[in-house]
Length: 81
Image (cartoon, rainbow, N blue to C red; front, side, top):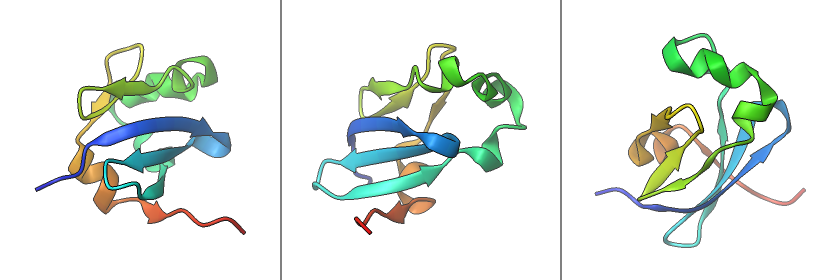
């Protein structure tokens, strides 16, 4: 079972602040993906910042998307410092 994404906010350095349906906030680093396939287009900051919630996951204006399970498993818990 996976948790749906309820909110996404693009951050500096190609990171995303994700809010999951259980209220948990996590940071996902997109940098490892930016040299692969359709994700290469997201090096353009304007495209990267077009990220939005789509169904239970996220999507960009170029129709790139990532499975919510991957987003959860590869992200780290967000904490204010």
